[in-house]
Image 1 (cartoon, rainbow over the protein chains, first blue to last red):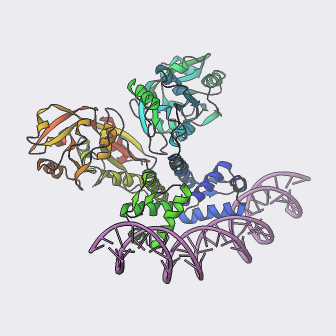
Image 2 (image 1 turned 60 degrees about the vertical axis):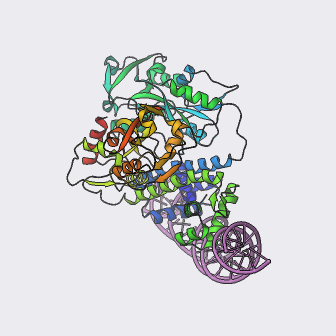
Image 3 (image 1 turned 30 degrees about the vertical axis):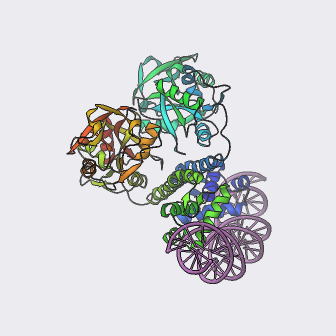
Length: 288
Length: 288
DNA sequence: GAGGACGCATCAGCATCGCTGATGTGCGCT
DNA sequence: AGCGCACATCAGCGATGCTGATGCGTCCTC
C-alpha cells in the first residue's frame, strides 16, 4: 500500500477514468493501470469495475481509508516543514459557515486576526497543516457527544456550543404542520446535498441507520441563505441549526424527534502557541 | 515519506540503535542508515542524533505522526482483508483494565462472548483491525468531554460512564490530610508510570500544562491491585477511578481540585454488524 | 449487424531505485 | 593514545517502475 498507489487510486475514483487520472497525475495511462493492478493484487480484491470505472464495495471501503491516510501524510509533512520556520505572528483561524455564530460570542483577541471560511475538510486540513492556529467546525451529533471528525492528525477539540437542529421545508409542505418528525421517515424524501453548508447526507445515513437520504440537488458553496432559498424553491429538504434556519424566508421549520440530534460547534487546534490563539481557544471553550 | 522509511525510523527510535533495528526488520545496517538519510534529506531536517541515537525535536515530532500513521495503514489493510471473509459469529470484545466496571452493569448478550483485556493501544488496534466487534476504553478527561484517543481509523465512540478520579497516596503521606490537591502541585512528585492500568503520564502533562510528571517507577501490567500495592509501598503516586481506588488497601485517597478531571469509559466500534454486538453497544451507550 | 473509436490491459525495453556486502570514519571508552 | 564499536559511504547488482507501443473488449454509430 504505497502512498503513490493510494494517491493514484483516489485520483482514478475521483475522475472516474484511468486516462484522465493519469494526465492529472502526470503519469501515462499505462502507469496508472499498473498502479491499480498492483494495489488489487496486493490487497487480493478487485477495487474497481472498468467500463464504467467505479469502485467495487472493496474499493469503496478502501476509499474511506485512503483519503484520511493521505491527508494525514500531508499533514505530517506540513507539520515537520514548519518546524524550522519562525512562528507566525498574529492570529489566524478558519471556520465552517455554520460555526460563524459561535465566533460572534467571543471577541477576537490580538491584532489583525485573519479569518477564512472553508468547507469541513479544508478547515481540518488547514489546522492540521498549521496554516491556521485555530478552527471552528460544526456538525450534527447526539447531545453532548463529540463530532465525528475525520482523523487526520493529532488535534484537540473542545465543545463550543450546541443548539437544536431544525428541519427546513418549503412553506406549505405537508410535514410543516407536524411539530416534530422522525429522521428515519425522511430517508426517501428529496434532500439537498450541501456538504459544506448543511449536514452532510452520509452523516444522516449513519444517524438514521438507513441507506436512503439520496441527494436530489447538490449545493456547493458556503452561503446559508442560498441553501435556504433552494429549499424554499422546492428543490429539497435540509437540516440547519435553529438560529440559522430562522433567518431563511419562505420556508417552514420543524423539529426532529428521533434520533435526538443537535447542532454542535467545536474548536479544533493542534499545538497552541502562547498568545492570542490560546486565549481565544480558552475563551471559546469556557463559554460552552 | 515512504511507509517503509517511517517504519524503520520508528524501529530505530524504539531500539535506540541502527544496527539492532536493522536486524529486527530483517535489513542490513547499511539499508537502515540509507533509510534514515533518505528521510532526513526528504524532510530537510536531521531526525536523529547519532551516538547516542535519539530523536531530535524534529524527530520527536515525526514520531507523533509516524506511529498513528502506520497503525492506520495496518488498520486499512486488515479492514480490507476481512471484507471477503465470512463475518465471525458470536460477540468478541476487548477492554482496558479500568473499563471493566462499566461492563458489569450491562449483561452480555449472545452466546459465548469472547473478552480480552488489553492496553489502550492494543485495544484500539484490535477494534480497528476488526479482531473484536466492540472495545471499552478508559481514560481521564474533562467532565463530559470525549477521551483523546489515538486516531487510527474510522471509529465511533460513545460515552458509557464517568466517575471521579482519586489520587492514590501511601497511607500517612502528608498530602493525605488535604481533601483535594491541585494537579499542577504534583508535577514534581514521584509518579508511577502505569500507561495501561492508570492514567498515562503524558495525559497529565497535557492536563496540567506542565512538563513534569516524570516517572520514578514504571509498571507494565493490567492489575489494578498490583498498582495499588506499589503506591502503598511508597514507590510513587497514581490516579485511579474512585471505585477502583477504594479497593486498594494501605493507601490514602484524595480528590483533584484543578483541573477538573473525571475518569471516563467509552465504547469504541467500527462498522457494527447486526446482532449481539449492536445490542451491547446500544445498551452500554444508553446507560450513560 | 458491421465498422470504428475509445479506453483499459499488456508487453518490451530501459532508467532508476534500493538492497547487500565491503570498506571508511569518527566518537567514546579504557 | 589506542582500540573497538557503531554509523556512514561506496560499488555493484537485482528488482522496480516508468514509457511508448500494441492488444483487446465494449460501446456507439450508421
